[in-house]
Image: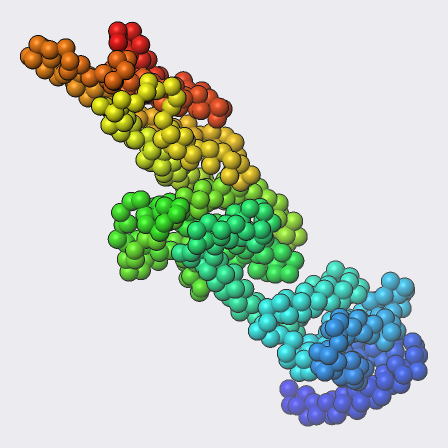
Length: 563
């Protein structure tokens, strides 16, 4: 209406004049702590619908000078607990300088409902925006994630301050208004958590990949030399640096020095990636050629190529699946290293439940309750690790078996020792048997602190079964050869019709062929005795009963035949 257009400027002028008077009156009431004046002014502001102007005035005149005085970047940076001290002073502002405002507006517990002036929230609309403005303008370095340790300390200290500030709000409704305020979101968005996580990710992934590199290095602790590689015996629960770093990385993800509630989902994903990466590492190690303990030559031909897998240093990429590179020759691994890899794998599987114990309190803290999902994912990771065990066991058993049979095949030399040498009748086992048993004794004695007894037992049984089968075939071939030679000589004697060509020693005792039979029998008997001394039953060793029966028959023949 034309009339309204005419009076609108007058209304605006009157409002401005009234507002100016109210500002002066409100400031006077605050300075003199006059509750009646403050109440009267705030009611008038509410009547003319200018509550936000009153809150802005309090922010500019009362809060801003205090914030500017308290927030001094040089003080915060130069004192060990400078940031905490600054936040403590900011928290003191509300009880010391906002007490009357809170009583009048119902923000204090002691407020009387009859005298309350509704519609105001000075903590949300006056104090908090000025605090955020001060932090953004006067402490810009506060939000710098360049140093992750410092950033973590600043972030956790700041979030603790926010929680304490929220507790100063008079009601849950006030807290909700605070969390919905633009300056609240601005403050939270200033913390660049994705960059912080990326730095932490590169930190963890880089150290882990270095530990999982081709050289199997030691874990921290007391060390012993293993060729050109050092292995741990004490000081760490794991034997190799690679496994030690896997566990350390998992612990670090959920430590109080790194964990942040808003990054829980990323840290959980990283934890699964670490376990998956270790599983790939074990698979790679399991196919490496095994080198001699004393030389750098491998016992088997080296495969030409492989696929390398690693944690991508870009956390936005899909990690854990690995990336193929150009084919590279496989570096060899010693028997000792392979055994320690198996020991570490077993220990890590046993500690999977400990990971859940680390994660659970942190997830419960942020309100996550579906722990069965977390436990299931960890169980899947454990299953993936378990899938590497058979291959590792087979490689170790094969290596032990080959190391042992390298000496057991010396049974082929027994005929050469007795044929036409006039050696005495054998009374004890050949030295090669003790040499063949050394790998098994070494396994029992040198690794008993690192390995579980059932694992040692399984490897001994498997390796002895394989080497005994080959030993059986070797002894069988030797005895067959001896028999053929014996029959050939008998036919030769008959052809020459002479008794002087009988292959006996000069003392007229046991024949050379029977000495060979007796020696092999003594070797096998001693072999069986040593197996039993290792805590194994010969009945559980495949082919041993057939071997024992074979040499028993040969022994009976040797002792029953007339000289």
